[in-house]
Length: 161
Image (cartoon, rainbow, N blue to C red; front, side):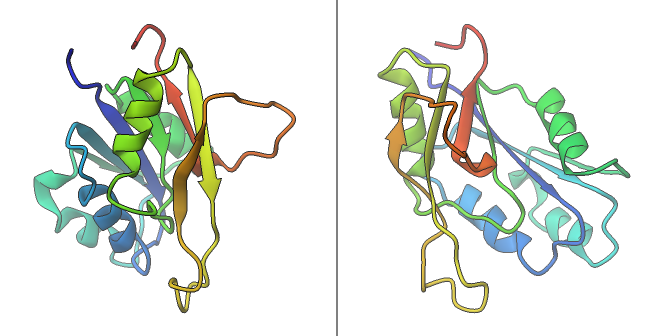
């Protein structure tokens, strides 16, 4: 069976202070079939140059004006070709190097269209106080009465599994 492609979309605007940690978090994943897409809202603080410094490790990069975060997310979704789509904000990071592998396992071993995981917030001055986005406790049931945080939700494209 072919390994599914995971599209990870990061949207940003003037995120030079935090986006390198986000990018490195995605690039350090042990699961290799990741399509990484970054959509930038015409940053002027060095974000564009920083993203470009990663070269072809970022499969798709677009910088242009947008009408806000959700407009940028929709641009990323339109560019995505993965079987599973996840959003990782430009000041967020995966908890560890196995997160995407755990996501693939959760989709592969369960008949589900969406999963979500835990989110932990960090002190920006000391990220070791808490840990970033953790999808350790992946749930295969989506309770629509829960308040879910966007970066903790991953969706499967129709018919992917």
